[in-house]
Length: 203
Image 1 (cartoon, one colour):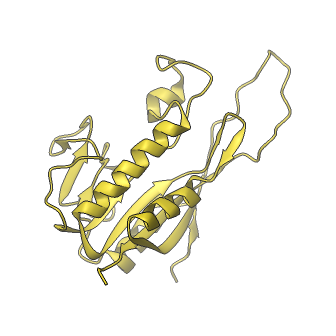
Image 2: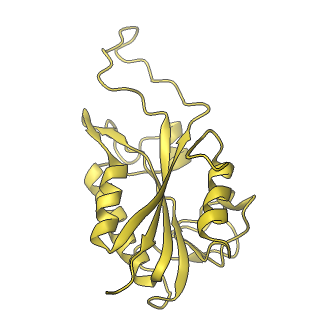
């Protein structure tokens, strides 16, 4: 039985490939170090703006060297953390490990342009997978997964499946003002989403 909620990313990825991408993944737009593919097989086309391993083509996810309507599955695993209390040169562990966006509008710009690019390279009836997480930014809740659904719908993609990855471990919140802790105003986000979309055919 395939479940929509899991603590295991590999389980979710295997479910997505088994149900929706039986021939494997054609394209990864943000390949990173390739940890996604330890149990599901490597994608045929691997891109990253700053390749970390061999065999990855240097390209931004918003503009990849592929013909239009040439592939049947695309994966997009972008950064989803924002750092709002320090400048871009801040050396926090989280910033060094994950990179990220410094304002939410930067995230919106990157996500929307990448979704449009994925729509360009996908054939009708093909699959787009995006991993995302909701964000508290400037004391406001941003339901990024809801925004992603809307952005994809605007590009002619329909939500086909949704998986929730619950974190096994999360870093604790830093101390603020010495020993004084500020009142928590939002629930701590301990989950992320894998959203699976299908590109609709032309009428």
